[in-house]
Image (cartoon, rainbow, N blue to C red; front, side, top):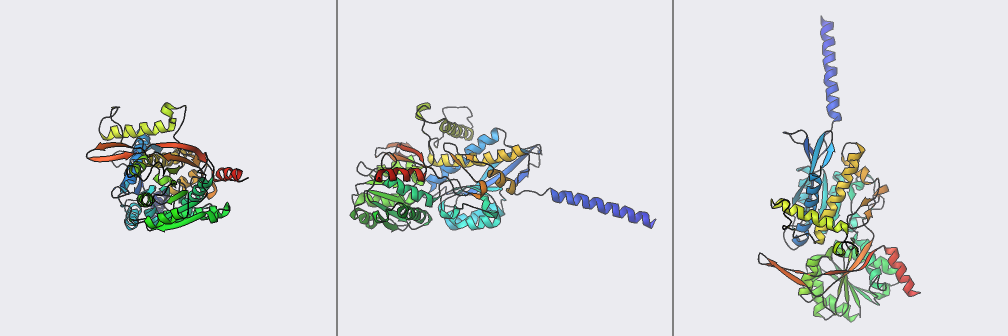
Length: 462
């Protein structure tokens, strides 16, 4: 009897161990959950912190609208399927007011309390700079950072560094392209003889400046470049602008984000700088430029140019725009109709249907979902590891752009840039007592790599 009891007990222990091992094998992935009331439905939770108030709300609000609009479209089209469960991708976002300390706090909340699967469209130079080390330590995937700080640049990422996947151009690379563009002859560039650089004393300004310095040495133009630094919180840039004017610069690179851009532009206007201005893609927006035109910063004697990493122009397309652009517009309008409970009402249009920052958010979500589709097609389980692995299996298409390649650990962002000019004429629209100014952009040249710009400059010098 004792032997029988012992045998039964041993069998029971074995059964318990089998079930325990099985349970261990079904490890729950952070951010992926199944609905308790409907086991055929689930959620993949992603998150970001983005300025939806303060000076940078004009960037953060449309950016997140673009993210939400594409995720809505993706979910409506069927979402992500795994193990007979259909998952919707949902965004959790917090307003960090473009404050690094708040950005870090909210990022920690997203990762440790909300338990997001990934950070999607991690937003802004300040927050990304303050959190990139923390993100790498935790190992949570970060897909598409809405900034180009140098800390994101990594040509051979390994370990947890592979999980940090930038898309937008990195500031150092853009700085090189800005200088090559300034000196290159038309139509590739601005044909400068001497270039001034006014840069903000922050990650964005220093990153672009470092790229300019490296490129100036590379193309033997170091003696033809003048540098002036400005605090990002400064309210007056007259001293810096006057130094650029007195150095007889005919092109000035404004190496700064949106808030310092206006301060620097005002300084150039005050000292009557007559020459060309060129700035980063982060400022290339009709609303931002419209405000500058309204203030007389952009003028006939002081035209403004900006780089871009997208190309929405197609001379043979509807109204001269590409098919990808019109898909973006349709997605934004459909989402706006959904929010207003007016599905299918074509009289309802999104206020962000032509907004460059909304395009960036839309692109971030679109590319993220492209990777989800790769994992789903493979039949493998969605985990942090499989997401990164399938992001590296081939170039990922950028809507309204080219592609980004993460293979073999490349984390260098987009490397091809276009050039647009903004008019000093502007339009106005008023809604709810708020007046918005818009300046139209004209494409000067399409996407060009740095070697292509250098080749154009070399040809001029021969």
